[in-house]
Length: 379
Image (cartoon, rainbow, N blue to C red; front, side, top):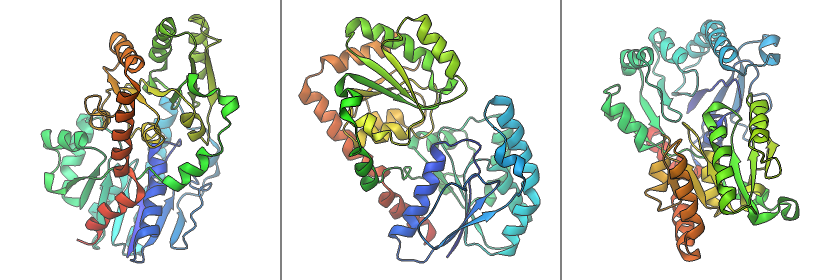
């Protein structure tokens, strides 16, 4: 069975990890022989290696400037997205016509491959994977409605996303299915976790927050909330893991709040597990969120979760504080109440939440993803 995957990314995001895990799940667990081609649009996948011999990276655009140019920032990212779409039209169409793929998985910058299906006469089945909670602009809504008959299946990461698409009558609910992101690889996490430097991390005094230093993660609110938390317990420390365009603004905010001695910016870290495994809790204040991969990692490592109820699947995962502590997005009092509840909860109550979270996170393993996606591929 031949599979083509399209997932061009300007910056490393959660979807990038998920694409790797999708490939690993199909090649590792299935008895069927999948021949997978991954489109390497402008070299973004050069640093990713796949052990399975059935994974082949297809180069699309050989423009050196696309590889080297920085593509971060609001204006820059949109300029390069449009440029990549324009330059990829003919090369991508040639690939699709040259080889009769059974399935075409598309993630990120999905408008181009969906549009090109109008020019295909082969039997390739298009599978659209939606990341997070989509912003239903007028243009996107009209585009999806117009092309939905060209899409074989749509994979939603949560029931919340699926329900939205049904409510807005964008897609026929028969082609919508919920499959949790295949993020959890237990053996990989355990190996990385065991590289912990407990003496350096100062263990259980640390609150950990993970994500790019952007508006989305709502770090100003995080810092203001943390200053209030210090009034409850001044032995705590906040470690922020990630990098991004708002780094200087965040540094300035830390200084303004006079919490320099309590907050550290750890930068991008390949091994976040050693931080999560040796921390008091995972704390996220995001305004919106795709699949919250760090939250899943925390759940697997038995680290308490305190997070905003921003859309896509967080409320579904936490389920009325059954698996962690959730607060209203951008609501200071709600966030502080969640922390006070966490501090006041008995060890037995916290442990119950951790056990419930650990059970739920099993739905996000690569093996569980394989079981669900195999039903679609063999139907």
